[in-house]
Length: 143
Image (cartoon, rainbow, N blue to C red; front, top):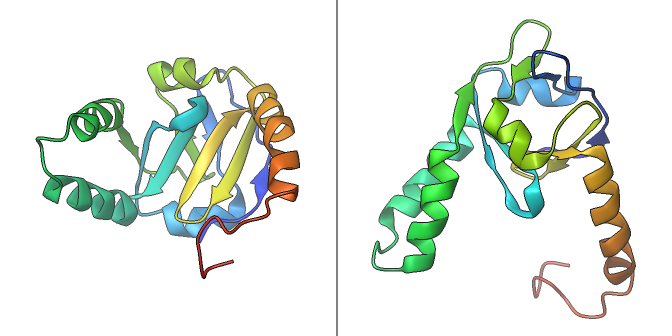
């Protein structure tokens, strides 16, 4: 499980140092792909495989599934962190997420999200109030 928020910087070669507490779960390999709200999703290889299997068994007649799968898989890149815990984020993914230097890396349960720091702050500012005032369960019976 990935938890917390961290603020690493992207280096000039497009490498991002993963937070130390995330490295063990990602050291065997990972997949980076486009996420919603213009962030990047980083999945441990096992979780990406699980998601792939779920999407594989869904009906290909569903247009929304086809559209999502095309973007999700065509933008995906696999990587293995180096000894310093760095991963290389491909140029097209950096461009999609607007990553230049200052980043925010968030734990999001089974995945890691990578955001441009300014974009993350804008998102957070727009969502925190509604989160604080949420009066109904998002997932009934869970929280």
